[in-house]
Amino acid sequence: MKLIIVEDEVRLRNSLTYLIPWDEHGIEVIGVYGDGLEGLQGIRHAKPDILLLDIEIPGISGLQLAEQALSFNASTKVVILSGHDEFKFAQTAIELGVYKYLLKPAGDMDILSAVTESADQLKRERESQYRRLMLEQKWEEHIPRLQEGFLQNWLSGRYDAWEIDKKSKEMQLTIHTNHAYVVVALEMDPLSEDEKRFSNKDQQLLQFSLLCIVREFASESGTYLSFNDYAGLTILVFTQKSDEQEQDFMSGLNIAVSKLQSMVKDCLKLSASAGIGWLSSGLTIRNSYRQAVQALHDRILYGKDIVIPFRQGQDAAQSGLAGSVQQLERKLEAALQTGDLELTMSVIEQLFHEGIDSAVTKEQIEEYVICLQGLLIRSIQLKGWLVREVVNEDYIYFRNLDLLLNKEQIQSWLIRTLRHIVEYGKLNRRENNHEFIREAVKMIDGQLDQEISLYGMAERLYVSSSYFSRLFKQEIGIPFSQYVTGKKMERAKELLLEGYKVYDTVLMTGYQDISYFTKVFRKYWGITPGECKKK
Image 1 (cartoon, one colour):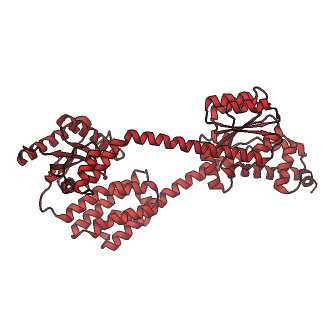
Image 2: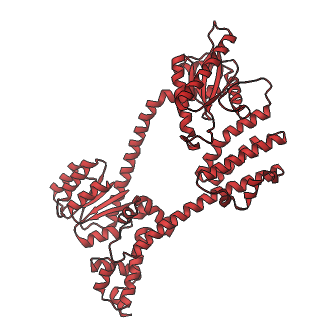
Image 3: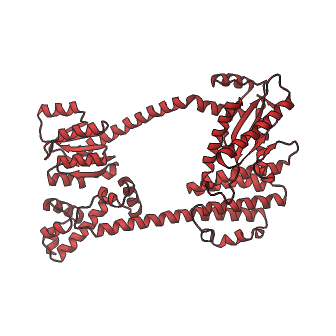
């Protein structure tokens, strides 16, 4: 939670800012002002969650400032710190919507408690608002999402006959277990090397574009259903009319899919391929779906821009291998993006089992390893890294896969390579973070004679104060304010021991109030500045 403090009394302002452990309670002080007009500008700029205000301040009063702040954002929590115990002030504060009204001299714990209570209240309000927004959003998406979920489960064979009839009516769909259907699975073809408009990063966008084209085509041609399956493939479900011969139906279906391919070429200047399953009932449609997906995966054998009908007697192992290849890119690249080694290993273990362990010929294993190698290289190069630098001694296997003589060697090489990729990514992020914080520390060391704030430092480094605060504590080990205070106190001790006067030391360490400086110095070193100077 972001807090702005407006208090004209210097000693109290410093005490509120530096002596109350805001960081320990998730409160971030992003602005401190001694004037109402300055505070108003700060509020407009920083948009705080909580305001801690005195009533009697120069410029405009605390109550006027609170009214202005609440007009900017009604959810802002305002805590008034006032020396007035007159009812009219409290009444005005209540009418304005002030959260707490404290009388001076309020203790640090009372002030901290009031601010943290207001933060908790604001969190509850935001959570409630978020839940309302989510419910509204879910309601807007209710029917389309439920329809898609039902269709995906229907294709997966998760429903009995009575569930299909019942749930389809609830979803406002007309599906019957005794009707005949054919499933078509479509996917954009891999991009060619000379493609300049799109890259592999755009595959998801291209697949979404394909779905949009398919939906437009379905609405024009009267095709029954169009949606995405769990794997992201675009699915078309054609239904056979009761008076239509199977041969005529399948012929018309092939013509329609070919026309759809032409639409994709016209719109995107790219190609898509399709797999077609066999005719199935509404109850056994999962058979047609699986056949369509297997047929589409055979694109690896026949090339792109093709419509492939499912053939009886297809080599099961080869079809399964192609299917794993199609899923591998999505699963592996998504896991590597997270940088989570455990998740990456879990995904690759599953894919290793589906591909290499399930392969029955040497040729199938070799093909699968080549595919794995291509995916790993692409994952590394998409991040702008060099393969040789990432994999180190395992680079030899990328140059000569024949050195991998058995499944165990392949699995070990694969695990080591994935570990290299994840660790290399973590090292790069860590080095970048170190450099960023080194720059911040350098700036602090050069400004010990000035007032240094977390918010001001974050602005100079062009990052958010919350991000800078978390990163600083993560890299240095202590909060920003604690680090700055420690640096200033060490500098102050050096100056005093060198013979500087206490007043000069105060100015040379960025403080304005001698009493406040003395209080901080004694708390840090256990002695007063005068006692330090005598040593």
